Length: 354
Image (cartoon, rainbow, N blue to C red):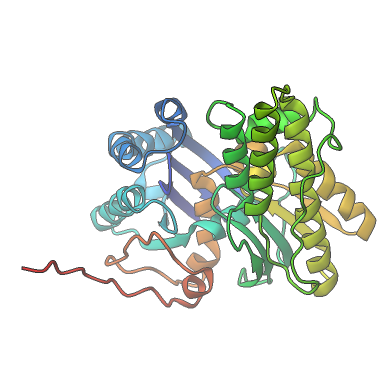
């Protein structure tokens, strides 16, 4: 089964063709990093307008790269939420248009389910992860601990109560004056600094909680930077990055360890943009050795938003014939549980006062 995936939830316009949920045949992604760098972050209106410019070109190119035509495609998958609403609408509208024009069935995909499925894609001649497994999703907007069963259904064990881990990385990068995107730069600098230079807080919350909180850590970093600058002291960026990253990773690893012991999971999957972080990969691999279980990560290029993961996430549904209607909408917020149970949020119309 060949599935065309489309992803436009934020600032990447991506199309991919994936066979049987595991084999990536071709992928084309138009990045907007340079476009948003001058603003220090993603501007939603700018992102959605650029998706309009790129979407058809990207889809046409992926067919050329795969040496395929629409006759080779069995279904169309598209991210329908959560994400930036304007950006999502471009992808959903394009996917619905292609489905209507070609008669191919449509599958709306939850963005987080896509990140989880990225680890299931085969890479470098090997095989991807096979459910069931425990998955830590760490990205700019999400930090979630999920138990994934053999049917690719999710049980949410915990999530962020405030800032996501990736969001904290980006905010700390901005505090330090690092250019957008700041997360990878913090990781690079952390490997040159001392992780014990600053004792930043670790918010582990309640003993039985699998939730996360990184807002206090971000504030602690800000307070330390402001204090030193007010005293005329130098701020060693490498040491701040190393100490900040050590605090984030310690919490992520501890919560994942608790969840692995609680669920009896034999495989840990780490997915999302922050899964590309070298420090996190090293720490999670060490945790897996400690627990005598496996740790798996998507290829670096599939950690950030991409269409291959969306096509892969759609495959279990496509096998069961669980198609989405052409009335499929885009949702800025969408519960993972509601998505997997088919309980779509109602569309609320705001009627202005006349």
